[in-house]
Amino acid sequence: MAVKWVTRAVACQVNGISERTLRRWINEGKIQAKHEGNRVLVLVDIADTEAVNSGQGVDIQADTAIIEQIKRENELLREQLKEKDRQIDQQQAIIMQLSRNQQLMIESSEQKKHRGFLSRLWKRTPKGDN
Image (tube, rainbow, N blue to C red; front, side):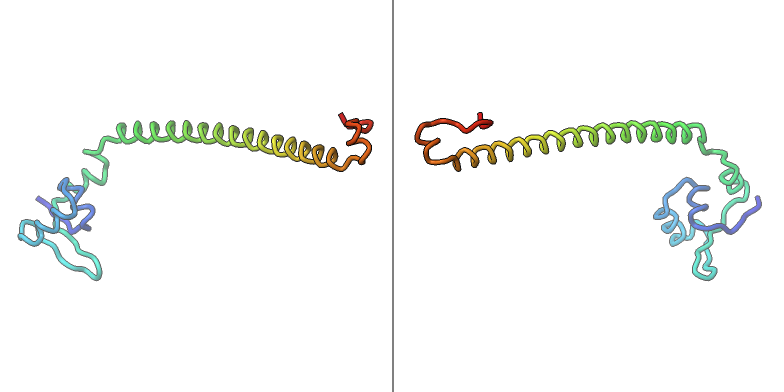
C-alpha cells in the first residue's frame, strides 16, 4: 500500500470524515500528521487520494442536477423580482396621479375661496369655474 502526505481537506474527503473527526483521530494517533510550514499534512493511502482526485466516489450527475435546479430556481426568482418591480412602478404611477389630482382639488378649492365679494354673495361662480 502506497501512502502520500496530503492536506487536511483532502484527508477528510478521502476518509469521508469531518475536519473535527480528523483532528480527533490525529490527537488519538489513529492517523499520522506533520507540520510543514503553516500547513498540517496527513498521511493517507494514495489509491484513495487518486479516487478523490479523479472524481470517483463523487456523484457528478447528482451535483450537475442540483446545479441545474438552482439555476432554474434563480431564473424563477429573477422573473418574480421583475414582476414585483413592475407592480411597484405601477403603484408609484397611481400614487403620483392621485397626488396631482389632490393638488388640483386643493387649488380649485382655494380659487373658489378667493372669488369676489359679490360673487359669493350671489352664490354665482365666475365663468370657467364649475
